[in-house]
Length: 194
Image (cartoon, rainbow, N blue to C red; front, side, top):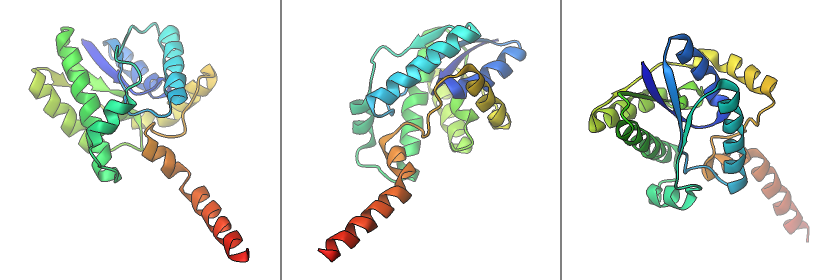
């Protein structure tokens, strides 16, 4: 079976690629992630996936539009709460992946978003299936989370960059929430002293 695999990043692709190849599937990867910020983060993820593609002998279709932060931000249209922005982000990436899969003659597509224990699997599956119906193909669902540690260990062994957040600016801010609060409290105390 040939499958078109949306890839969010190199480390998250490792375990799914291994599993799908072991199941006899022929994989073509697709890198499309307009949500990633800042540009250097985007660049590091491209570099990590280039290494994974080399090591795994994986053909990759690279999104030709490049760094898509402006498009992603405009698609949010003010949605900033996680319950609002994540579905929009899934929609954008899975829609583009399903369309690209269909246009390239694939009958099946999937996503490495299904590897992350931090993503909303039920929602990804639902949106993936909806986009598959829209484009007349199938969404291949498999829960890759059981290989979470194995994927991390392989990324470390390869020495590829492992990102500390999903990629969006809101996630970037949230990962520093405690530090932001501590700094804010510290500055507030200093202001009161003066």
